[in-house]
Image (cartoon, one colour):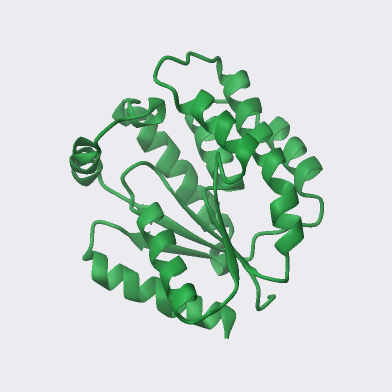
Length: 204
């Protein structure tokens, strides 16, 4: 594995992944380690424009349009990833497996289509390590209630989130060596330490 790995944080809404991305960012900044941080959708000027369109509560796209918008947002970020690949640590808040978990396992889009476009976009770029944050129903609902505003993806029913989380867990099972499951129902400080210790191992 490269000492400047691509590290992805995955999980459904309310799982704490964005919190942990920011915690790792502060750790790297404190230790003066070069990195970039990207979120999907978003991360670049054009990708952020697409993000606003996708997550707008008034948007009502069919499942294939949704998929193509997410992949268009990814396409806008590829140059950022290629520019820093193996030169800086790359932190990504949601990436390829989110597309598979949400669009395939959650919405039923053909996996072959998703994989084909991802291969076209990423070429030789591969993820080095993934943190999957999992959450139970009670904590998910409590955390969503605390948000000041909810986007379109914060308002699906629990059945949808269950399908997506099960999809993530299937992906983790297929990639055990490069996946670490974080139980976000446990103490947040405990999980922060666990993740930071794993980060240290990845970049030492």
